[in-house]
Structure formats: C-alpha cells, structure tokens
Length: 538
Image (cartoon, rainbow, N blue to C red; front, top):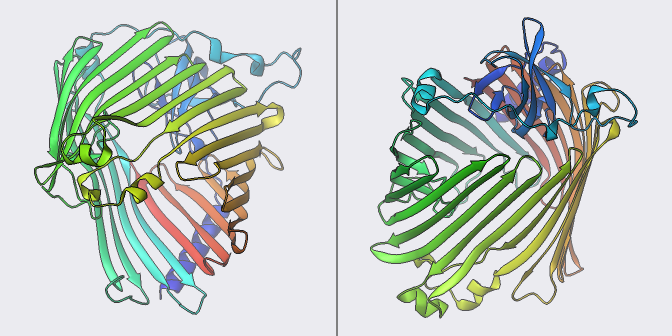
C-alpha cells in the first residue's frame, strides 16, 4: 500500500509539473524602514545582487538590489525611488547578478553598478506612528508530507512517514507591535519491521520548536517575549520555555534578561530539570554606510539545582554597505565547583569564531573564517573520561571565493583546514560549484558540485551534476545524478550512487505541490526514496 501511494503521487506530481505553464507575478510583500521584501526568491531564480524594478501603472517608480535571498522571498535595498513603494506593487528583474556585459564599451543597463549607489534615505517617521501605519500580516505555511522508503536489500526495512508541519508568523497584531510565532512538526512512523527495545514498528514524533507571544512595538521602552522561545540574542542558549524582557535605553542601547527551563532536546517535551538564566547588553548604531551591532551577555545553565554551565558571550557585527561584513562571536567559560576541578582553570575561551566577507565589485566576493569552537563541560557529561572530552577539540580556517562571470556563469570555490589536538596531520576539505543559467533553454540552470576531504586515516569525495528547468516563474523540474566515496585506512571503502528527480508546482497563488523521487545504489543503501508535499502559503 505504501509503495502504491508513493508511486501514484509521484507520477501525478511529475505529470502536472511538466504540463504547467502559468506564472505568478513578483510583487512587493511588505516593507521595513531599510528593506523591501518581494514574494520570490532563490527557487524562482533570484540571486544576491540582482537588480529589480518596481512598476506601477506601467511606469518604473523604483529600482532595488537583492541584498538577502531565501528559497521563496528576498530582501532588497532601495537604490532609486521616484515614488513611495507600496505593498502589492509589481516587480520585475532587470539585471541578474551574473549578467556582466561582454564588452566594457557596450551601452547596456547591465553596465550600471547599482551596488555602489547610495540608497535613498527613507522618510523620517515617528516610531510609534510607523507601527500603527503598518498593516497586520499573517505569514507562514501549512504542509502535509509523505516520505517513503523502499528498501531493495534483504533486510526489507521499508517505512513511510506521513507528517504535518506548520510555520506561522502573525506580525503587528492590532497594529500595536504584537506578534505570535508558531513552528511545529508532527510525524507518524510506519515500519515493516521492528527492532525490539530499539525501534518500534509504529510511533508518533511530535516536535514543538517555537510558540511565542512577542510584544515589541517600535519606540516602546519595554519589550518582552514569553512561551517557547529560540533566543536570538545569544546563540549558545538555544531553546527556552520562559520569559525574556528587554528595556530600551534610547534608540541604540538595550539591556535585558531571560529565565526559564530547557525543553527535552530528544522529544521537545516540557521539563523542569534544566533551567537557564541570563542578562545581556545590546548596542546598535548606524552612521551613514556603516552599521554596527554588539552583544555581551552572562548566562547560566543549571541541572537539578547544580551548575551545568556558566559563560560570558560576546558578539559583534559590522556592515559597510554591501562591500564589507565582519562577524565575531566568542564564549568565555566561568568554571567553579566541579567544573573547575575537571577543567583545571577558572576562565577558558571556547567557541571563538570570526568571519570577514569582502565584495569589492558586484561580480566577486570573498570570505575568510577562523573557527576555534571547543568542547565545554556540562553536568550531563560530568562522568565522561578526559581522553574522550579532549579528543574532539579542534581549530580551523576556511576560505571562500565566488565569481559571477559573463554569460551567466558562476564559480564558487572553498578550501579549509582543521586539526584536532590528537591528530598527527590536519584534515583538509575542499569544494567547488560551477553553474550556468540559460544554457540550453531560457530559464534553465546547470550546476556541477564537487566536495572532498582528506586526513591521515580517512578521505571522501562527493560529485553531483544537476539540471533544472523553470516552467514559468514558480514551477520547475530538475534531474540530478551524483555519488560519493568514503575510504578508511586505505583498505575499507564505501561507494554510493544517487539519482534524483525533483519538481515544484505552484497551484494558484497560495497552494504548492513539490517532491522528489530518488534512486540509490551502493554500499550504504539500495532502493528508492521519495517525498511528496502539498502545502498552503499564507
């Protein structure tokens, strides 16, 4: 039954996708004081640096440059505006980021370097009135999925997983800066076989990732959040069932604190065994083309009333238009009691990470990062042997280069090296992507990916070739082939081949249908995997 449902859905999906021709119009979805958001993203072919124009009554009223892009939306910077941009305005792409003019003497809109144009300053509006003028919005998606596996091996471990996912963002309710965020997923596993005491034949797995009420009106002295929170202020804190308060001391400085319990990371169930508390200070400043934000926080985690972890968190971000971006974060452990006995020190620097991205021209960008994130003692691993704890201490460095070449060619290269304290030699990792848009047909996309690593005992490589054809704006079908090989000690090797057919169909404005069918053959798995998803975007 599971196989019939899976194959039937896949055949229907691919037939409908291949016959789809309609296209949805790109429009302004909503605005902030600094950015304009559109309802299309990477899945519709948008890329970082693309130039867009806003159209009303057949006339171009503004030009935008894509500054951030996700799968189905993009945030754009205004580089020219002859009239006020409104939600619902039509948007068209003018200049893909990869389209560099073939000749420097050619007169073409693509010769315009829009990344260097100073954005038009937004009209100054009193913060409280600005919030009231923005309409309330409910965004998110509700999706029903079915994931199935047909195992061709003698184990015959077939299984199917129907699941339901919900992501909801209710913004600016009653126009008073009140928001509700909900994110959850429910899965039901159905397996042909069970492993007594290890894996049941049928089980539910329900996960609540976020359910928060947020009060953050612009200009208010007090902001707060409560419920199940993913604390964005401090990355190391993670999920929290509790309360976060923030007092705004002017337009640049804020001080806050949070307190609550940590959900069970295995089941996401509520528990009171682990509590977390902390205080933080945030500073933000924008002066012309330079934007800075910094955070300093003191955080404590306690299990059963005993210290599990206490640390100081420091984070800094600097933006200089689109040319330069610097990010740094670090955690300094404060060890007392049993933690000092195990570590041997009172203070220890852990989780240091720094990254700098530089884009001197629209067609080239480089990134360099240093990572020295280390293990730290918690009450959960208090009995772990020192040799196992220290084995995974490592540090590394990574470089990245992206070139947007003429005729829609794109090249990405990265290389890195990291070393554990017990390694005799470092581990080198490397990779690259070569892609081309409009290769055979208009709105086509071809990419070749290669990644690998090598160390003193192990090595591995992965190669993937993918062709995608867009049918209209929201619809596409893609075919990919690739595989990987993994070697240990020069004698033990595992190989895997993977072939995948993927499709996406937008049904009207709100509904979508997507999925993939994958065939694998090799040392790790022999069989078919497939996923089908029907969703509603709001």
